[in-house]
Image (cartoon, rainbow, N blue to C red; front, top):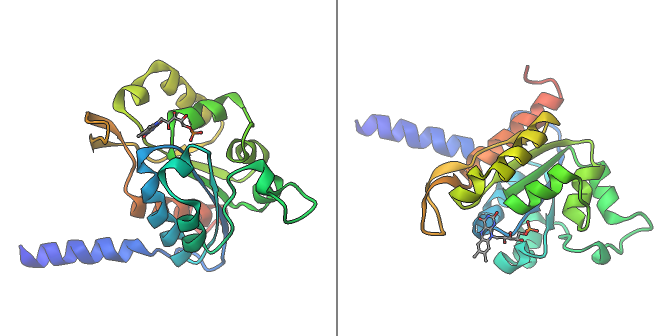
Length: 207
Ligand SMILES: Cc1cc2nc3c(=O)[nH]c(=O)nc-3n(C[C@H](O)[C@H](O)[C@H](O)COP(=O)(O)O)c2cc1C
């Protein structure tokens, strides 16, 4: 019994830092205005530990939940929060990020960003990057269960899936809004693992 639980815990910690491939990749980590946004700090840290360059892009609502300073420190890169803090070069920073990305991962993804992506809106850097990039896109939704199961959200999810966007979660459990149900952000270790899997798949390391 004790040995089983030791083995389980070894398996879990082994998955925390995953290396399926050898080269460093660029991951644009989008963070949106969900109560789960604080978990994206740990996710950023895991992706960096997995050996990647992580570029965080936050919506204006996301910065109400978690500080760009935290994400800048953990990702070791500047954080984009507006089209107008892009002053580094003559090229619009969001286009540079879109071109540079090997993976666009949005975690947590709100109902709102999914609606924007489904409709091709682009009035903030994260939505614009999603339109401009040709990298794989992985969304980890988090929201109230009724928001998730609403036909509008379900239609958006289906539309995005039909364009090749991948999803991880949400999972079932106790939600911050007081309800229990489907809507919790998937475990960050598993999100990092899926990101790694998608990057490795691009390199044909995994069938
Ligand atoms: C405390 C609080 C928690 C919220 N949590 C969520 C959430 O988990 N998922 C979601 O879709 N919206 C949530 N919202 C609503 C979003 O913040 C709102 O829809 C916002 O417009 C999302 O903007 P963004 O997608 O541009 O970040 C929450 C709002 C508040 C005030």
